[in-house]
Length: 29
Image (cartoon, rainbow, N blue to C red; front, top):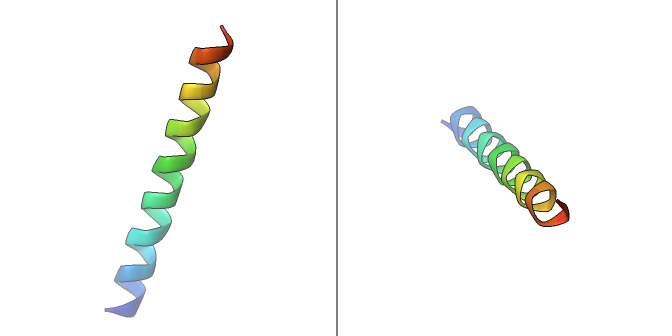
């Protein structure tokens, strides 16, 4: 169960990072 929660947390952080990169690229155009 703990491993599953860690995996979900990691996935969420990756999505947030990708979303931030996407927003940065969008605003810097």
